Amino acid sequence: MTVKIGVVGTSWWADAMYLPALRTHPDATLAALCGRDGDKARRVAAAYDIPKVYTDAERMFREGGLDAVVIATANETHHPLTLAALRAGLHVLCEKPLALTYAQAREMADLARAGGRITMVPFTYSYMPVNRAIKQKLDEGFLGKPFHLNLRYYAGYGFNTDYIWRFDARMAGSGAIGDIGSHFLYLARWWFGEIESVCALAAPMLDRATLDPSGQPYPLTEDSSIMLLRFASGAQGVVQASTIAWAGTPFGQTHHAELNGSNGTLQAYTDWDTVQQLSGAQVNDGPVRPLEIPETIWGGVRRDTVHNTYRDVFRTQNHMAREFASAIARGADPASLRPNFEDGCAIQRLTDAAVRSAAERRWVDVAEIG
Image (cartoon, rainbow, N blue to C red; front, side, top):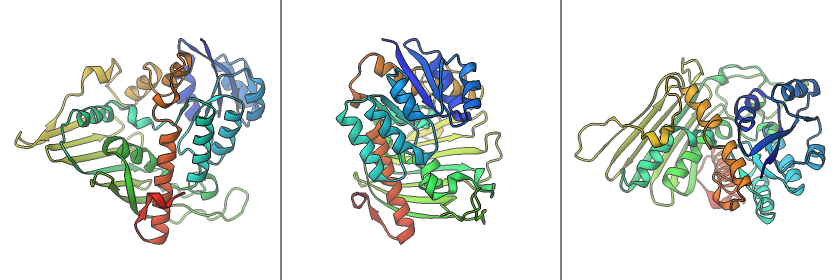
């Protein structure tokens, strides 16, 4: 089966992440592209030999002859576009955060499950070799009983104090928590299991433009956040997501992870330039030292720069968009593909809990979010 896929969105992200990956998939074809700017959409489509171009996504869903769609658009569009795609009988890969609220995400996940649709939410960093190596170590029992983790995502794009839609609650839902924190909330849950409650500190730290491009005031979201997590296992966690941390690296971000348990410690650092390092030690086994990432995880990707690794993971290996296409081609069980809409829904629930916690200055049980 050749899977006919449409893509909604013509941003740099679609051009970097989805279109190159799907163009070379042996069992998929890029059948249609939709963008608000018709001229730009036609230019992008021509670059990737995509035969059909639309400016109306719902029309593409109805008339494009598609099996599946990738929704790579702004956050506030995820819910309506996904519902329309699912109602048109399509399998859906939708960008994170899955929706603006848990209620919206729950509706999306329920409709997908009822229709037997294959879904995916691309928490991209879970596919990177360092993070997959951590998951393997945990599954092998390297840490023993997990005690606590500390994850930090430092980025600097928030130093730009002009209007940015990612800090507009109407369009983004939340700021640093949903945009970058959701990635590390997913890692925390993937590594240590279900999270029962959240306590968050989150606020805009810099003075920002107070009017949107139309000259209207808008609800401002946080540019920095710190979230305390209580896991169902009893383990503890900290996830810090900041858009105002000066990294000084070419891509303007760094990732840090420390995990501790009864048997040992794991530490990871990625500078988004040339360093992607995993270290660790077990109890009574000497100091923390670099650990080798297995070749089975690297899978032949380039390692000279983090970005070349990133490109190869998603464009040459069977991950994320390519894995989504492969699952459809082989008629996979929708529940077998991860992270799927149920995972995206769970992370949206944690995001909502963190936002509520910061606003009300209290611990919030995840079960409160309904």
